[in-house]
Every structure is written in structure tokens, then in C-alpha cells.
Length: 268
Image 1: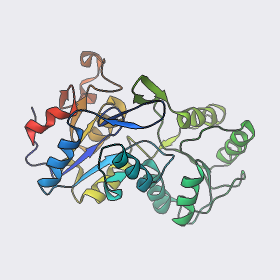
Image 2 (image 1 turned 180 degrees about the vertical axis):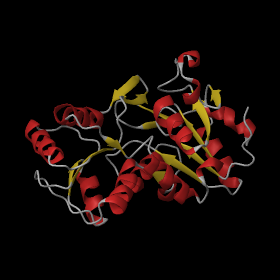
Image 3 (image 1 turned 90 degrees about the horizontal axis):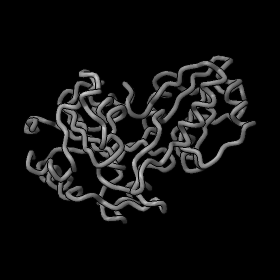
Image 4 (image 1 turned 45 degrees about the horizontal axis):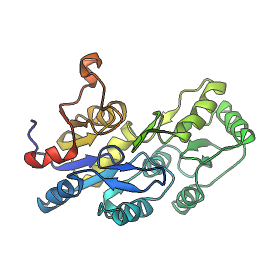
């Protein structure tokens, strides 16, 4: 058991850690998930749910989780789109971006002052979740990248954990296609990335080494925590549930491992 008394803020993954989703994408809260969040709130400490889902705005995500039985406010939810906007503001302010994403995400980025450009003259390419994609659109994006546009991706992992196993990331598939033909390494702005670490510290009002990161994915969630020097807890209810930690390099291992999020109640 690791000490959580001095932790100033908490970061939770969503799918596989706090909920499991069915084929209808409805979320079923896992045992203890609601109680853990309530216990942290009652202590006066802030928390954030950081999902790598990038097809909805935080308000829509939060409303859906609340409706499904996991009460969450908009201010308690972050997505890679939030960190993508932050990256663009700091590195390419005012530059046009070709966005692969839902209408909701495209509208969100435009409302935040990001000019959208569907041509190969775009200054950057950003890939969020896409339900489907045309090859012609991939070619346009690839040409923009070959002209120097950075290739940003919400995440580059295989997927997330649902009720019946892994749900593959179509955003990662789209990013991989562009990366393959351009031979350019994508820049991840979701989990794990320095951009995400900075955004989380800002939202929680605490340095990253005073934060605890809890999630089911060694590469994304534990990787995010390790990147920021945070305390890390792996939940075996999702993607990395069967991973033998003895085969994981010591520098990538979590500080603690639990079978389900409800075990954290005894540590709070």
C-alpha cells in the first residue's frame, strides 16, 4: 500500500478503471468507483477523469457518465482534445489544422480559435477518434505532413477495455496509416505526454509529483504518471489485467497494483 495522505490531486482513467462499456457504449460503473470519487471529494482534494476518448466534448462525456451512474462534472473531465488545443496554442498559435474527428470535436476546436483547413496546406494534422475515413483524406493529410505539418494524435495505443475485451482505436489506425507513408513519428498529445502532464497539473493546482494517477493501462496511464513523477496505481480490471509485471522493465512498473478501484477506499 502506498501513502495517499500527501497526494494533492487524483487522476483517474475511465474505461477499464472506473467503468466498463458495452457494445452500445453505455458505461457500467465498476464496484467502488462511485464511492472512491465521493471519498476524495469529501476530503477537499480535486480529481480529474482523463479519458483518451476523443469523439466527445468533456461536457458530453461527463453527462453520459452521470446518466450511467457515475456522477462527474464537466470540470472533472479532460480529453486529448483539451491537450491538443493547449499544444496548438503554445506551439502553433493561429495556425490552420486538418482535423480528423467528429463534428462535435471540430466545432469545439474552431470555437477555441483553431482555424480548420482540410487541404494539404494545413500547418498541422490532428487525429482524434473517427468513425470512418476516406483514403483520399488520408492522402491529403500525408501530403500536409510531408510539407512539414506535425502529425498530432489523441492517442497511439491499441484501444481501451470494454465489457467484452479490447475496443480498437480507430484514431490510432488512422494515425498509423499517415505515419507509415510519411515515415514521420506522431506526437501524442493525450496519454502519455508532457502536454497532458502540464495540463493535469494546471487543472488540479498541484505539481505532478504530488498527484496520484490510477488506471488500467501500463503504457498510457502508468506511463503518464511516471512521466510526471506521480504516484501510480495499476488497476487490473482492464487492459493490463493479465500482464506479468516481472516482464515489465522496472522503470515502467506502477508503484502499486490493485484488482479493482474499490481497494483504494482503504487508503483514503
